[in-house]
Length: 294
Image (cartoon, rainbow, N blue to C red; front, top):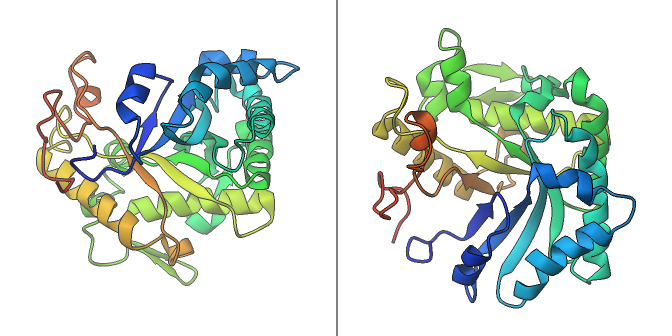
């Protein structure tokens, strides 16, 4: 990561071996709480969240640059959704107790499925079945100054509806706007998806200064041809990286959004297909395609 100029990493769960590798670097770390651990961390007291920090953060706090703790990965919607709000609240209180609230922020990772309306982006709204929990969670992360983390995948939207979504619109290569929403023109699906999340957040918070971060986006390089090719993966991820470094979405044009590109490595243990081929590097650390500059 240091050799390739990667400045941040998201871990789905605590891994002390990876912490050891990250010691002494300036790489920002977002570490996740497993969905199965949410009920325990949402208990009546903060002893569970404080214990989690004492095990997975405090021993490394002077050497590892922790930035975020995500309380659940796509737990909303789902059976663990009911625990997310209190788990975030408890983790925030524990961070304050350890004087870490100015350094580390708790939040949650949500999928596109929490949106009930996403088109046009200005009408973005949370789905009825998660509206209450998403309203509470969005207001909570807003109140503590944390971003809502959202997973944004134009690839999955394209393969699920290729008759209405064009490949150039999904890959950032369209030269003409696909549609205009009010005064905002949309040339790519990524912008439309992010702005729909923003509109939904603003709708429930009642303020325009909500914060959002893209916790996952990317394009697989194999497993579902003709959509998954090395060329398409290189095109999408390079355009995504360059966009994140240079401009925001139409709704937030001057504001750069932090983005995690999924994933660092292809994952051989996974079943053959798309899920095995979403990495920027092969397991031997050779790049699948040029993306990160050395």
